[in-house]
Image (cartoon, rainbow, N blue to C red; front, side, top):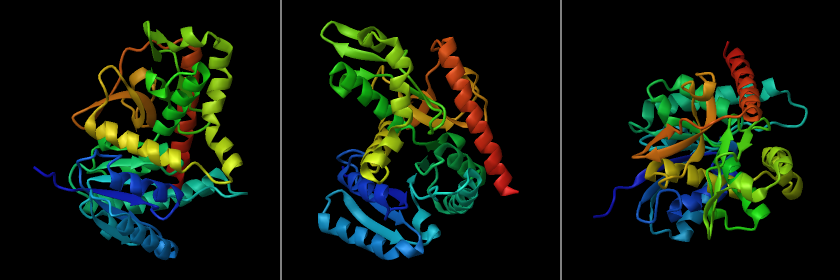
Length: 332
């Protein structure tokens, strides 16, 4: 029997990430090859014409799974009835801007979009925040959409997770699909901690620890971490534009695993509301290793944390606490 369409909202849909993301959703990359979708696309009024151009292209691509397109500059229309919301729109940091300036702009954006989702989205709507500062934008959204369960508001650190997988696969010259269980802890920023202490690689002799195969702790504790932390900046330097294709792809990965489940024995990284696991302060949106089943995520428990890792986990939590304080100061 044919499935009912799922309504998926993409904000900032006329931008670079949105333009890469909407065809992936329409093609079934996010929710599977048998799940029809209705796309809701929101952007700001100055982008209305470009947004209409994206809608025209979606029509022209004749995606069999795409059962409708809503393209609008009205947040209420965009949020009405949506089951999944991918929040790509935000205010980017511009040259000469202080962090507080960017934060106050994003606080007002996420406050108004949270209200629209709160009042008009479908019950049990799942929200993924992509726009930076992603963790803190998600926290603001949670604050102003109190009826959306906190477990339904997440932020994107899957891009960093995938970057870490990519670096290990290149270093070992193995298929990226054979590497699993890296972890991104903390903030989607340059303080995040890409951790390979529990990661493994599938070999002809069975699964082997990444540390054992790489056999270079100096690289794993140094260059590997900074490469993943600063990959976004490196891509901007090379492309003169920020990562769009990889961000869109990882947003699809994040939602797909959340909705359809993670493979047995595999975890992924998601920015979720901290419950105090691993001594991370509760009340922050922090990236943890999670498994997903039946549309719910759960933090992987019981992993050993060495002293090197503990320092990294605490440092990124400190930054998130500072960001939270800054964001809340913009509310007053």
